[in-house]
Each structure stands twice: as C-alpha cells, then as structure tokens.
Image (cartoon, rainbow, N blue to C red):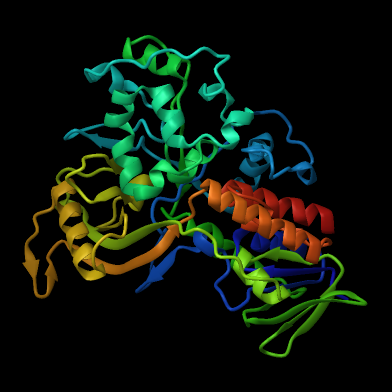
Length: 458
C-alpha cells in the first residue's frame, strides 16, 4: 500500500519524499520526466556543478521554537519566516553551511557593499544624493505596509519605490538594476513581490538616517552557501538519501494521466506505472497541471528573459575579484557576477563563476559579450588560447525567454484563476511550489512546504 504519492520535480516534493521515506512510509515519487529539485538542482557540466545564477541560503535570526509546520499559510507573504528555526535545523542536517562574504554592488564605477540584498546602506553616506521626502506612516504607500496593507495589493514596485526612496536616489541606486533584470516589466512588478527581482523597498526614514550617517537599526542581511560552494549540493544530498531507501519508489517517466477515481486520484506514467492515493502531493507548473486535468491551458503573461553563462576562471588571473557583484552601471549588459567558490571561502585553481543578464540580442553574441564583461570586471587579461581564452573556460550558456517569473497584476490574476480551477478539480491534493501561491517558490518556502506535507502524511 502506498502511504504517499508525490507528483512533480520541485524541491518541496523531494524534501517530502525524503522525510516520509526516512520515517518508514511507503512512498512513490513521480518526477514527470524532469530532474528532481527543479531550479535548485543547478546544472552539472563536465563534472562541475553550477548553481543557475546566484542562489544563496537565508537563515533565521530567531531562537524561538518554531510552530507546527502544518500551520504554514502560503497566502501570507513571507510566512516561512515564522518557521525560520525549523528551516535552519533542517538545513543544518543536510548541508555544511558557510556564511558568504558581503556581496558588492558596482555603482557609478565604484564597488561598494551591496545595498540591494545585503541592506548595506553605507553607499548613501558616500554619494551626493538627496534623501527621500518622508512619508507619513499613515500614507497607504509607506513601505511599512508592504506585506499587509491593502494598497499594496495593486501598487507597483516602481510607484512604491519612487515614493519611499525618492526619485533621484531610486534612479541612481536601484532603477538601473531593475531595468536590467526586468526590462519593460520593471514598471509592472507588484511592490509586494519586489524580492522576486532581488529589489529592495526601504522605509524613507531608514534611507534618510543612512544618508545622514545616523544609525538605521537595520543590520546587514547575511547569506549562506554550502561548504562545496553550490546550493545544488543540497539537492544532490537529498537524492543520495532517497536512493538508499528501499521503501521509496522513484519514477522519472512522464505522467500520462491524472484522474479521480474510486480509490482517490490515480496517476499513470509512460513506463506503465499506475498509483492511486486519496491525497496526492503536487509539485508541477500550472500549465502542466491544466494539461493533465483537461482544463483550459491559460496563457500566463511572460516573465523576464534571462541568460546565464557558467565559466571556470583561473584564480591567479583575477586581479579584481568579487564573491558576488551586482552591476548597476548602465554601460554593462551583465547585472550580476557570482564566484561560487569565493562565496564559500574556497580558492581552487579554477573558480566557478556565473554571469547573469537579461537575454537581449543573439545568444552567441550575448554570451561572448558577457565573458568580455567578466574579464573587465574581474581584471582578467582577455588573452586568447586556441579558440577560447587562456584564463576563462565557458562551460555552458543558458537562455530562457521567460526565465524570471514576474508577479505583475496580470500574472497574479492568472495564478489565482489557475489555483481556483485546480482546487475545484482536485480539492484533496496537497499543493507545493507555484501551485501553492504566487511568490512562494523560494528555497525556504519549498523546504517548509515539504516539511509541512510530510507532517500531514505521517
């Protein structure tokens, strides 16, 4: 008898499969023909594992005992933070973690501690930029209400940021990065979901204090990675644990049908597997679920295009290295360069370096241009060797027309309609990842979703 049926390839179903399997349950995991772990699996090229872009871990600042994970409510923005100690404990069991060095930002030709993700607002005291006009805390657009205020149901990030940051400060310190990451969608991103594009939304009082050199009360936001320098190592470790469990059956075949029946929901696969369960766990995309359930496949508004170039760079060749550099200067196409090994405090002969940009222009020309920018930013002499460079090896280049899901009003409406249709068609299902809601597919969210599912099915 099957105690748990999990369908999908996201991180949440993989976490749940391991948790349930190690608790002795009979588990069937069907990945629908896709590699387990989703985005967090990264990519392995020629034996070298890369995260796809900058992927980091967050840890809780709380020491309070976490509540029961079954109380997780994905409709509450950042609800995972209530369970921070639970996620911390889980990560501590599954990976050796290293705190990363403070990321940097290239602003108007100069490197400074990063203010986009790490909350290092030192940059404001060094630049001649006026502080924002202070908003009343009663103003519906004040950033204090960004997670709960009704106004933020419809307020765009561009509107909220200009009001809270001030037009000049925002135009110099945030907007160039937003434009590179999102392109035209920078004006449509909903403010409540600003972290989907790694963008900050500060209180005006905080920025004014930083501009004047006064204490802001805002500590640096720290990040962690694995000891090996790739968060993808977490997924690899989960797969190894899963492979050792005789009570867990994994099928990598494509799902051919998902339908309700007398014994609950039955899933069939292309390799002939047929499994039923009253409460399947789902971890696929909306369009795939609609296809399997015979629902109209809704056209979701496109996300932001992205290109990721994975390189090996000779350590001794980098004269101006950086663990992670956000690039705000408009003259450069890249918006971020991440040295995965430096992030983990490692210094092998060849470092894994990932360059990210919006996918504008042709693939080969864009990739070559990004490698040239990498050489410029990290001080690598672009000396040729054969058909490539002496000190840079390009192992992979990935381009996606909609690689970054952007929560716009249209995208949110499409998600809500898809979620409602899925709830009507399969009300017993336990949903994870994008099926659980908009903006709840982060690593922390998915770990918590997997733990919550496991707790419900134990």
